[in-house]
Image (cartoon, rainbow, N blue to C red; front, side, top):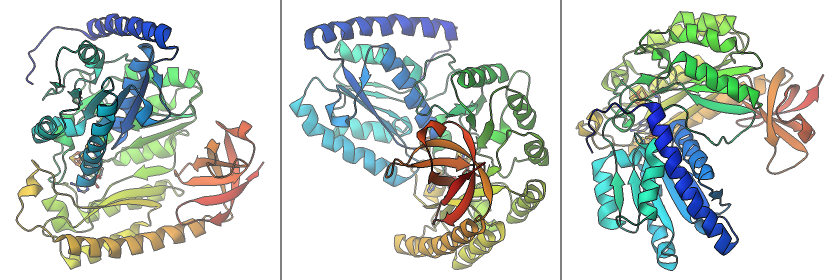
Length: 477
Ligand code: SAH
Ligand code: SF4
Ligand code: F3S
């Protein structure tokens, strides 16, 4: 749907939403009076923190409407699938679930089924839903999440069978929507939306639109209010945080922005992701070293250890420039935990390219790496490349890389034995209530025996034993 330019302001949208939210709340209160229970919602979220955050907004609006969260998906009166399309298997899972919903909807026709998120920004997906999944009630996209109350209201009043509203361009950033946060001690804060980089494999620029940053003031206010509610750690999110602030009326540099966040009283930890290797500055690394709250964590996705592949991916940096950034970062931040993303099986990739990737992995010494098999995304340039790699070859290469990665991470974990780490305690372990789990500054999961009263505190833990991807330890003073 093309949208016309309007002069509607952020406040107008919030006010209009409140009117609709109150209407739905009245209907839900009546439902409670008649049925002695609240209407329940369930949101199933796929994909990255951008979607997680949109789900938090949807949940915030639903709670205001008088809905209550359902512990089980299939018991809910309203089910929302917030979808991701970064790789094919994410899409397949959603279609599988939508298929399963058919019989549920037959049993309970009053059930409302909504699908939103990145997949919906692709016209061929919406066409498939219309053709094969007509039991869906509502489809909306990533650019009109703030309009959810009005969309839901139309569905509740059954104005249409299947209501589809997907905007093909991003609007202004809508501030001030209530969000329902998942954790108390740590929070994700979006500082920018969209992406301008058009890596040739990636669908995100097409589903999330162009890069736009929130103002420093609105982010600082959000972090302050989170801290007032007990948040100790924030992770600042964007697809390429190093270009934060470039498009603001008064441009702001990301490193200077971090200095501002570091000043917020009561906040204890700052993380950010994702840093794009083409835009990361030495100044940012200096600021990380200078600011006491910034964690010893750097997520710097390399994608491939071959310059030829990086060029075909349109990544705009080289293995050499990447390694120079890593060298400088390690020099300034000796305890730094570096993590990365890798794509295996990109069109044209050779066995030699994989050897080069393995060499790079060894040189950097990562604490974590997210490794993905290249997935063809319709509408991206790489989908049209004629040198695609056969699936079986991709899988063999993937196994080869994973073996080296896992061995490296295991060695790294063993190296932490004996060290005392500061751990922000998140929760008790799901398997054993006498064990607490939390994260070190490097973002490594650490578990140790302790009392649940420590949840939300930063404690010192001496590492006693490594696990393949995490650490065990004991509390020390
Ligand atoms: N903006 C971030 C990453 C966003 S997507 C960045 O540039 O680093 C997260 C990761 O998914 C990417 O880093 C990449 O490794 C992976 N990815 C994206 N598109 C993919 C595709 N078509 N196939 C396989 N992996 C992909
Ligand atoms: Fe995708 Fe590249 Fe943008 Fe990351 S920087 S979201 S990989 S296009
Ligand atoms: Fe995120 Fe997936 Fe969309 S990775 S931006 S939810 S395509």
